[in-house]
Image 1 (cartoon, rainbow, N blue to C red):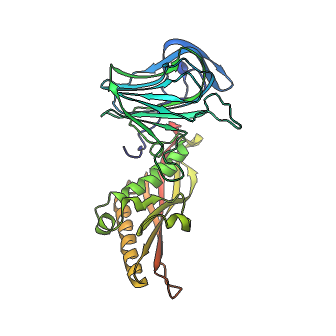
Image 2 (image 1 turned 90 degrees about the vertical axis):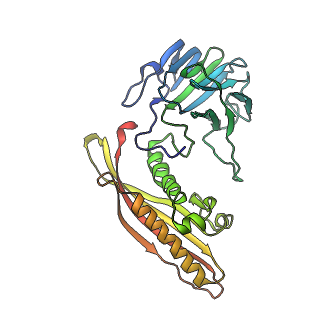
Image 3 (image 1 turned 120 degrees about the horizontal axis):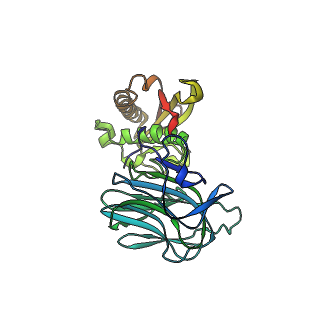
Length: 353
């Protein structure tokens, strides 16, 4: 999948109120398939209730924040995505420490605290995705990789579907559903469609989208001299992190953003300005080689972004740029770091919130 666009968003956002009567724009209500629930302390508490929506597409993303008062029976279906061809489910295991991801095979999701028993406990966030080919993934607490960079998502292939259906709830136990988000625009990872629209516009649609644009460039240096694994978002640009990647490296960082004015009363549409910094690092046999190679790479980054991003006139434009070119200061220096800063101006529709 790719980063969700401005027209791909959460179609339903339940924040602890009655799922069958949601309010707000671009916020579809759920159909009560069985039973019901009650609103208590910002949670929709269910002992016997199931809700569903019938989608028209084939790729889905579903995120729920849940807590157990009493664990549902083992095998109880808590979440289901079915695109008519493939089906995947999250099932209770009868305890508060694990869940099952069930498709054509079953994978255990362990080390959970659904019963909120630990000190400073928080609700468990589960993201479930299913694409049109049947590939399904589950993420816990929106975490993609652990501290060692190892992927920590859970994957299965969906079993045979029985009809398009997005379904959640429980008929046994006592489950507090603090939040439920759903989108039928795609099977998005936690980096591609974030729960916060502010974070989505900042990190995903600006930062991660630029990383993807650079990775997919056909230009010679970017295509042949810089590995995709060395083109990353700059969550960590410390020297220790830089040493973990093979040079040349490209780090993209959204350094700051601001909204100088709102386009309409009530803030339905606003103009935002983003400062995006691109750090290009090259280590060569001598500084002259490093400098020239680094400048070629930075130049291709500029050419790629200038010609393919910020080109939508009044809604998405590059308004300025600045380049800082490195120079050798020590006799034994062979590492060159050039920095490119681009300022984007985008008009954002805030009503999807």
